Image (cartoon, rainbow, N blue to C red; front, side, top):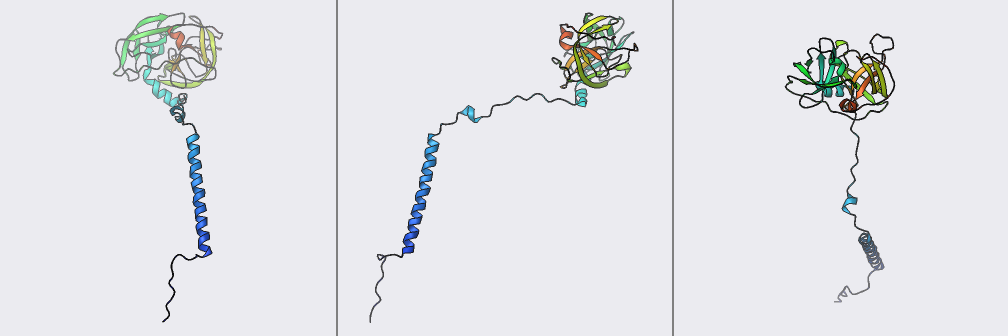
Length: 262
């Protein structure tokens, strides 16, 4: 019987197989060249320094507060001041309970009584007076269980928002809002002329004197001392005056304006 011829793998292969292998080899070569190029670029690039990798922090200004937020923050620091002749306002400015107020509120003499936000009532002694600036400090004989001093602020800018807290016309714990309408004003009052004042349009009336004028962050920038009174009725006419907090603690100023003390 005739036998089938043996078939081994050494014979010529079909052209299609040879073409596929060549294409596969060419693709692998392209991929390999790409990997080599990427590695070469990375090796040639300078290493990033640690400082370059970290973003630099940016300073953002403190956010402004709403009027209710300012009131809630500062109201515990505001006190009612009563004498036999006057009703006014004061604000706690130190951990020991020291109260800053307007001098004309306590200048008439007699017993001084302060009422804190929690209802605590105590007598108070005069620590310092500065009649030229209409500023005085008081030391209460008794403190509330929790003393909340207000935060002192810095300068003032025309057009900046302000909030006043006080006891106008005996309406205790009242708040009003407005803007700074002028700087370095002078007010002619019953007790003299006071210069370097902040002019503002937040509503104030008799009884507001000695209360804090606050900026948009709830910081004290002034102490309310007087208002403009063109008709002589001691009623608010759209202009109030405050001693800048820096002057209230140590300084003075110049300007023009007119108004009685409240």
